[in-house]
Image (cartoon, rainbow, N blue to C red; front, top):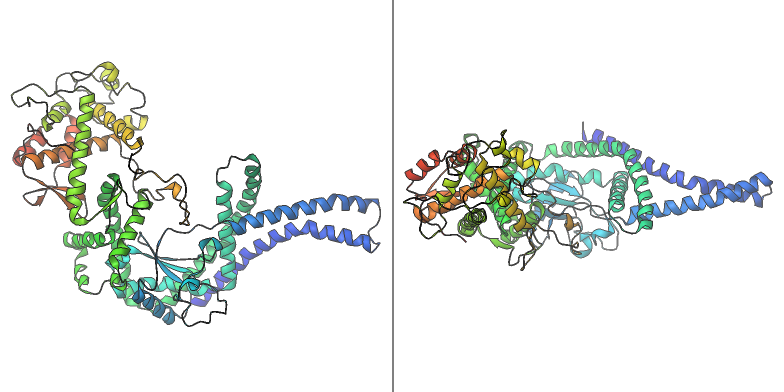
Amino acid sequence: MGVEAGAQVARARALAVLRVRSRALAVALLPAAVAVILLAGVAGDRLDGPVWDQARWVLTPVAALVLLAAAGIALVVARARPAMSPTVPVTEEAAPDLYRMVRDLADRLDVPAPSAIALTPDCDSWLEDRTHPAHGPPPAEEHQDIAGAGRQAHRRQPVAPVLVIGSPFLWWMRVGELRAVLAPVVAGTGPSAHPDIAAARRFVRGLDAAVAVTSAPRRDPVSRALLAGVGRVARLLLRRCRGHAAEMERGVAAAAAERAQAVDYGLRIVAQEQVGLAYAGWDRLLTRVALPAWRMGRWPSRLDAGVVAALTELSRRDRLAEGFASRLGERPACDLLEEPGAVDEAASLLAARLFHGGPAGPGPDWSPVDWSDYPEEVVDRKWRLDAARLHRVLDAMGVRPVPGPTAPATGAPTLSRVLDHLTDTAPGWTAQKAGASGPAADSPAPGPGTTPAEDPATSPGTRDPHDDEDLSGTTAPSATLAARLSAELAREEAAPSPAAPSPAAPSPTPDPTTLWDDRALPLFPLQPPRTARELLADHLTAMVCCAAMDTAGAMPGLDWLDGPTLLVDGERTADLAPKVLTLIEDGDATPLRIWLSQLGIRPEKPVRLV
């Protein structure tokens, strides 16, 4: 499909959307038009008689009600604020080279330049219309933006959409690659400037925003009933427009892609490979590196720089990524920014809000962390907090160290206490798997010092059907301890912080300075809540790592692709997870004890907890 063909399809579909709007307007005006004709007939003595009088008396109030309802619907649609993506605005003063590159790109494509540039903490780029009055004054009224350069101030020009760029692209891609990736996006401003397409988009966005307004919960029954009617009409119109709007956007995309073929076509093929690579590195960085820090109330302040480190490490490990590291000698796209560090920090904070739900700014319980401090301030602290929680739960269960020559006399926390408790041959426990048939599955024998009333397998609120299914392949001691840990962590997360709101808790009221509702944070949660089995594995791993640091001189480390890692003699340990799972699932601590012995880790020695 060529440029003209794609544009023609988009315009034809835009006209179809506008015809839906026109028909809706005609339906609203039809009773009024008939009423006007009937009233005009009285003045001309043409429509006289009791039948016409009765028709006038009936139809005139109906027409007035229909007009009033149509005006109310139109008012809601016009005043409803369309959704706007949360982004970090970038002014021309903060990135003159980036604005110049986009302006030159628009000139080569012979399309209007975007009105402004913003960054999103994701691996995507798009154009976004922010011309609604609720979005504030257009950039041309605030400063000389891309599209407003050299134009007369007294002439009212249509405001072009905002160019939203994925922030990881700026740090990982080279300048030429970014230009090639943005070419088809910027080319979309051409079809967007067509009056019919712009009007159709405004109409669809207004309907969508009206549906969102009418769906919001309200206590007033009158307004709830009125808005319910508005919502039904808006949804009906949206259903009539949906197919045409989708085809219109496909036509716009096809026209933009065809127009961009003439700009850096060969480089675009290589750049698209970098898009996929950046997405993979960004996803692993968020889920395995940033998420553990966010859960602790810390947010890495250089996430985009971390993408470069993660993808460089991937290029070193993965044979499929050979050759990508050689690109790093070229000029990175982040050099187009005047202060890359400040932009990276703003994008990192926004990423924490969107993907985890943190507060809008730093605080006592929500502070930034540099990558150089990550091992000490995040990894070490995370392991010791988890180990402390594990021993608190064991204390609550009344679990005591197994008597023997290696048992500590002071009752200090040790790894041996945990291993002996989870070993299937420990005193007081059956060898039956949790979830198997028999009484041991439903109510495992309590450990030393544990009363039946404390047994989490029979305590309400500590386990649910999902946990039972998840723990069905574990031993009874593991299932009970996992359920206890899950309940303890849930209580901690539910408890309000005395200093600042919890990182995962949204603010009670929306921030008036933002144009998106932050009461629903996180908007894009990375992972579902951890299962009880995963929590037990994390806590047991943390206890092993604490013992390694305190008794064998190991160090906390950061792996750019896998997150927190244990370093022994400067080397990353990668074979701990299978040993931990063997203990949890089979109650066999032998593989883990052999691993500990080989590394010189003393499980009987006390460890330091936070």
